[in-house]
Image (cartoon, rainbow, N blue to C red; front, side, top):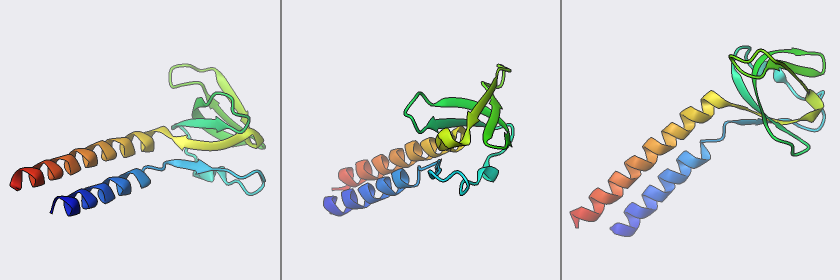
Length: 120
């Protein structure tokens, strides 16, 4: 009985982990990249292809071959990132929601395992 509960709980946990991907990858060919799913006024983390530090930007718009935004909600410094340098863009809000869901799911699985172990 314990093995089946542990197997079910590990499968459930892995399902939560797999569903936590909130990153949009972009290809080397910038003509194929569609930045229309980025919404103005939202915070995004932009990972660069050259491996430099990721940048958090408050996205404003796409201007030709550049992504334009500001350094933060209170910082009005304009940030311009070339589309050719972007490896991935992550929506910070979705990442926080998914992380919260994983934590809640893990707590539920732990409660299930704990209650199953006490039932014997």
